[in-house]
Length: 159
Length: 185
Image 1 (cartoon, chains in turn red, blue):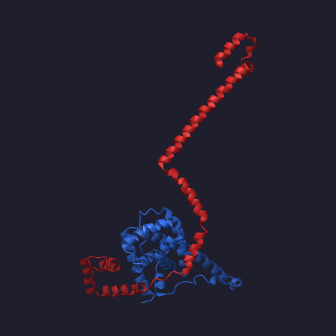
Image 2 (cartoon, chains in turn orange, cyan):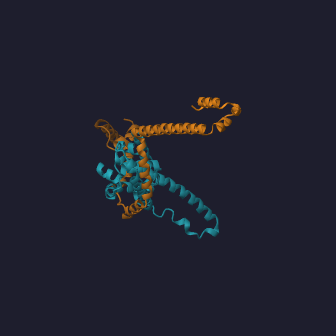
Image 3 (cartoon, each protein chain N blue to C red):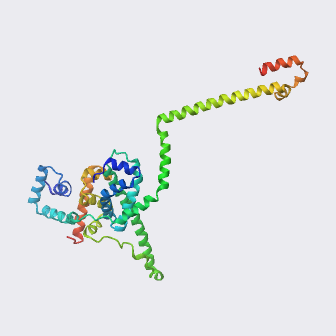
């Protein structure tokens, strides 16, 4: 094994115990036979001793107190989340289909209702004031028509 | 650090005692990673608070597809790095301010410029970590101090295993070189 390869492995898989026995043995053989790499390996090991000796520090109690305080001040966000989650029901395809169908039925119902309403209102206006209606639609000759004929005209227009 | 699905779900429903369980079992990791990346106890406390406040609201969207620990570690590392970047920016602005104070005798008595890094941990590990950049510091902390393996580090950092290996090797190379240069051995 060459020095470059040995040093690369020393600082990665070998140091981390991730090499198989065979490759690990080759690295060790190289270290034993190369003074320069042996020195390099010693430097590497000693550089990392402080890391391995260091102990994890305890978390100051004030940290949890701070978190509790901040969580207590969160209700508005939580509320926003709940409202948002209420609307998340519309993400279901069945809910979407139900909403779409309801809107379609509502539109059809409203359309039919208004069409019928307008027709009956037009009808009643025709029956109550045929002369006024005739003048609105530009039937200026109405006054000259005999009564019977005018009835016929309106029976054709308004039913 | 094993946290049951039940505890996570209870905490996600807003149960503080369940959330406290999560905090007790994982705050040590979050705090120590934050401490080593930020090099300040005060910053580490703030980062830990931010991570757990984010965690509390984020638990509702946790889908159990990924490991909870990996998710938490990732949030902790990102939070610490973001805080570090922000802090570096503030420090460089402060340095500019200090220079202007030095240049202006009328401002020299102003005490503002003194407390920038008061809380920096002066122990040996902090000293060593200060020799490398943030990217390298993170891999050293996760591997040398928290004992994560390459695969875990890959998931936490969102990079592939080969990148983890290369980055760690490079971090160690640089550290060994700087230790020698600074006569720290």
